[in-house]
Image 1 (cartoon, rainbow, N blue to C red):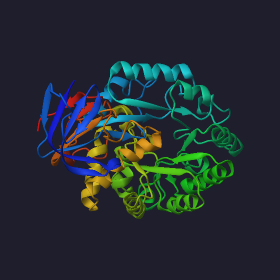
Image 2: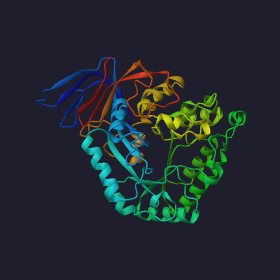
Image 3: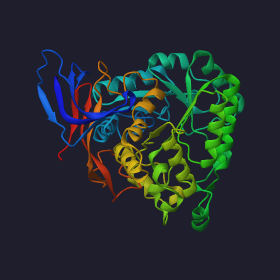
Image 4: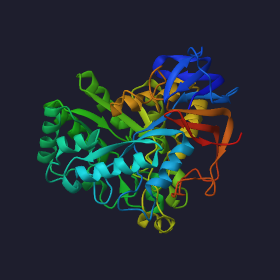
Length: 427
């Protein structure tokens, strides 16, 4: 399709573009900006007056629940949710059932996603077989099958000798390792931050030290091996100095936080709201504020949705027996806009945290920007519009989120993947 998007405010943080412009798309690629290519006749035009055109969003953590957990959600349902959220590229953690530790499983997942013809997926392979933390996975074969990195998701390796071997192997072949720092002994049976709320409600606590102790160990072993690291879903202010120190030593380390920890803290649990049962847990308000400041300063590289659809029955249990997780794909854009508005962050800067920054972490040269000749993945939204969050409006099979009942800033109008309109909504 040949498509002209006219009269838009075009924001492309990667290319430092923020101006009124027309965008021309042909053969699934960005054909030109400002002036049409010679002989270009559009088959369709979108009048984007008053709207913003940005690169398609890139999400570093979205559980699509296939294979093995289709009763919670399906690849098809969550791909539709991605389109409804403007997310055109997403990384899939390896904690499926079975885990992504077999090349055939990764190839099947990629084939299924390609057949659905929606968002581009980037599988993150299991760092160890079965995520059991005992034997290394076949990283080279998994990379050939389509994996972009390797992780334990939220199942940490308890044996540091095994962790050392995985980092040594990954370093030898240049594979990036993604770690969510969490000491399994300090988090065992815990469900909420070790603070006033957990004490008041009698909830089993998880201390901030569970994150920082694990993070310190991971960084020390990575420094010893030279491994390339991404630290996923930080939640504590006390983790930030460790990241700063590692970078000052010249280590190749990036990090992200999720949208829930950008906006919420332990007080949002209220009276046992299971929608706020998350991993990592919501921390103190001081932690939240420190993370927001670090994201604004660029010390935290990217935002992710940590999309984890949970079925209603699992959330209807008492807080400490409920399943952790919340839907997030459709909230990534509006919650980023909410942060930008509240903290007076320039829109190009805010959008960079969900476009080019995560694309670079994925190692994708084709996503996260709108350079001429690159893949035409983009989203178009109304910055003055609003998005009500309700069970009936969420496309994801996961209807549980702490933001139910709220109205968030911004209204997605179009999601375009490789030049094809995959989602369109009324004004």
